[in-house]
Amino acid sequence: MIIAFGALGAALLYALGYLELKGSIHHGATSKRVNIFSNYAMAAWSLPLVLLPFFFPKQFHFHPNWQAALAAAMAGISLFIGRICTVKALAKADLSISAPLLGAKTVLVALFSILLLHTPIGWKLMGAAALTVAALTLLQAGPDQNRHHRRSAVGWALGASILFAFVDVLTQGYARTCGIAFFQPVMFVILALMTPLLGSTPPAPLIAKKRLLIGGAVIGFQAPLVILLIGLFGEATLINILYSTRTIWSVGVDAWKGEGNAREFWLARLAGALLLMGAIVLALVK
Image (tube, rainbow, N blue to C red; front, top):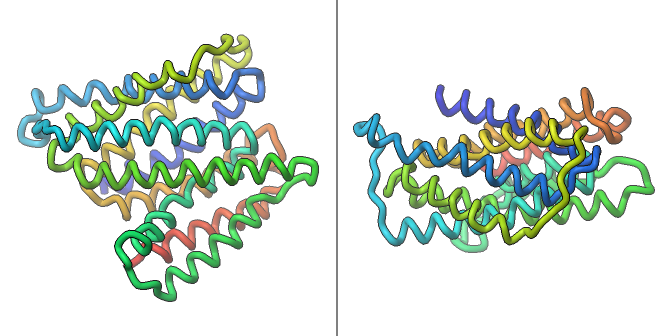
């Protein structure tokens, strides 16, 4: 029950948060500033987790070791680069395009198992691949003059999906042994420490600042929530299936309050989101 409410809640918060961040970019905030604020918000939400073993010693353990620290650092670096790709995708296309594409990470996890673990290719995975191709085609529906930007968004989103899949694998592999109260704060501190590498950026216009603050705070909360669920319960597959409902939420939220072409092309994009959701379930169901 906790997994279901947490993952589904995070999926809805994802759609609402990125709608605000997309709006802040639309009103003049740079993608770099969006990235910077969101990264610091994630770290701020994650740091208090280090106190959990002191208040709930039976529920949360704290066993730091070098292997776990290295894995957390690698996860933080992957998250840092993946966040750059995510915001680039968001800046290039509507939320109803870029957000569903990020759901492809769950299919990529299944594909990684074939490439790295030599898992046999069954009909379910072949069907998932076909559905994913069809979904990507439908998700790119939009004005012809913006076709180049939509294709660019696909590339950035797929790059982010690969990196985020790596983060999930590391979290599931190490967070439960060393304790989420150690793994997650280290991971997000690394993310925060790397953020100055993005360089300086002009302040956001006043009209964009409010949406940046709201969106950054929401995204900063939901991303650590997903990592926390994986670290506590180790059910990365189930959590990713539930979390992938953000593909549908994102299309709905963008059609409701978006500022791009979401209303005009919402039916095709919703069909693409549903196909991608089907591909994710088909690829991961046992």
